[in-house]
Image 1 (cartoon, one colour):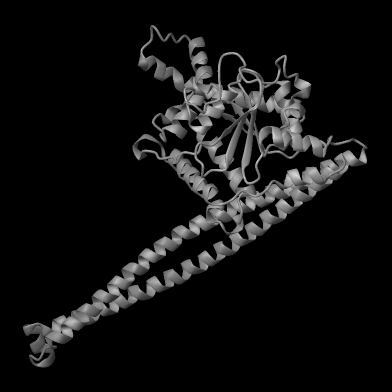
Image 2 (cartoon, rainbow, N blue to C red):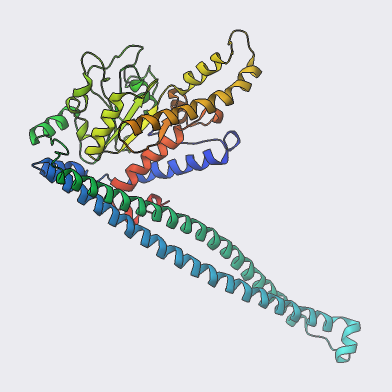
Amino acid sequence: MGQVLVVGIGVAGCALLQLAWHIWKRLVSVSTRPVRDNPRLRAMAESESGEEYVRGIAGLAAQNASEAARVAEEAQRQSEQAIRDKVRALHREVELTREVGRAKRRQRTLEAEGDPLLGLFWRGGKGPSVERLDEVRRETERIQEKAKKARQNSMEIVERVKVTQAVMEKTAREAEESTRTAKEVQADAEECLKRGIRPVVIPTLEEISAAKKRVQYEQGRFHFAVAGVAGSGKSSFVNAIRGVDAQHQDAAESGIVETTVTIGRYPDPNPDLPFVWYDIPGAGTLQQPDWLYFNTQGLFVFDCVVVLFDNRFTETDIAILTNCRRFQIPTYIVRSKADIHIRNIMHKDGYDSDRDDRAVRESLFPDARRRFITDTRASVKKNLKEGGLPDQRVYMISNSTLLSIVRDRSLWAPHKIIDELELIKDILDEVCSHRCADRANDDDCLV
């Protein structure tokens, strides 16, 4: 993800190009601003009980909602100012257009007076001087140039109004969502405390310190844990999102069987980006019982957790998401190997790669792709509901496509892209919106 994404206009649709441009702006923003410390970890370290932690997290949620509301108010103010600028620019354009009309009439009058025949009629043959006529013509040209610039300015302001209004609507939605989340967190905390339920078991300071030391946690960096059941493709995902293939010297070891037995730490290849990716040993193996997975891997110290699954969304995945929700850790649900699953659907529909030609493959691919996306979303939604969790987006990706986007800086096969660009965009948005220093003054963090 540390590579600067460059794409060819001729090979991708407008929507993909807009995503690529958004990602590039986010990368620039993140690479030029320090990452603030995680307030959630500070609240955890300062809490002596689950009750204190829950109340502290509720307070942080309220602060985030207040900050989002402030940003929304600023966006509203900028939008109103842009509209006023638009009205002034349009008035100026109208005034100059009228002035151009008057100047042209003066010019035509003088030209008529300078005509030998018309001059005899108007002034007994005495027309205007050549100097006077040239002066009027130059004045007309100057006014026309001013009017042209005024029109260009009006067009630019109209575009700026569109952008600021879009920003205003986006920040208003984010403020509303933050307020809603804060109320939910507060309500959940109060309900648990009222019913005497211990909401969360807080790790001791020693456990937090040991977990940070084990993963080499660094202040000023953003730490992503990629977790999930064994064999879901976590190592391949860590490689792809960083833009390195399996043969790269810094690649995470991957294979058919679970190859990760200890946490692997992989900084982003771009030293300007404060990202560190962690390949977490797979849950469900003999070495990692499901019920110990979250705490033994120290997932509570990470800034973000990517829950990766391949075939089935399991109880282990639900357990990880549930614990992340308790600790207010942002999560992303990702289904890997999309290309393989789509190909399997095509084979069930009768496709034979040895017998059928490219035309047959291309005719079957769109429907197989659509069914894969629909079935995956429905399955995850059902499992989240059964697990008592709110609905959450699932990102369907192919590691080979993700690698091509990040490493090769290309959208050469847009028909293969499902959610790879959206995943990169949303992860960068998370970093920018919550941890980018001075984000209130950062225009890129508002777009």
